[in-house]
Amino acid sequence: MNTFLDLLIVVSMVLITVGLLSVALMFLVKNKKVRQVCFYIAVALGLYIGYVGIRINWFGFSGQAAFAALLALIGVGAFVLERVKKDSDKAFLFARITAAAALPLGIMNALFL
Image 1 (spheres, rainbow, N blue to C red):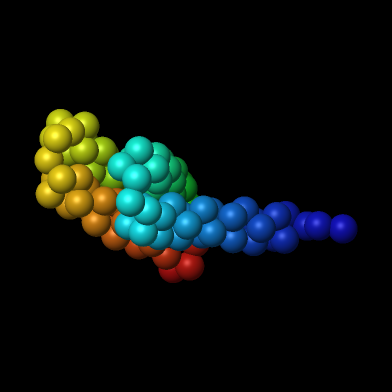
Image 2: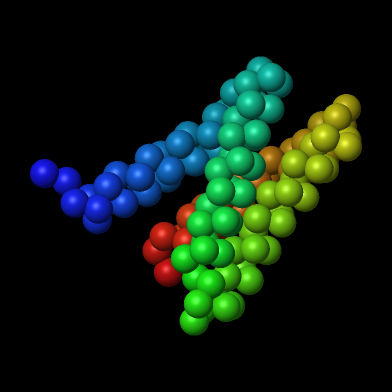
């Protein structure tokens, strides 16, 4: 019989697994479309984790909530950069790096700190 703590652990493990898989595939796969899809998944997970970090840390830990909001804004900035500079490979690489950095930091901020 699962308790809510067990379900929380399962959900956090799924988020961590999907996040790490999308970040890894974003850099390892040569196909541009697959890279973009993995980038969008990483940005969406980063935004969701930022939202979760804000909701968890809202009362009492305003510094962590502000850090979660900053990481969510970094994800939005990476998405906007990728959309504005569609043809630039360097801008897409920078957007992937920022999304790849924001996702694990957001997971650590929301779930482990």
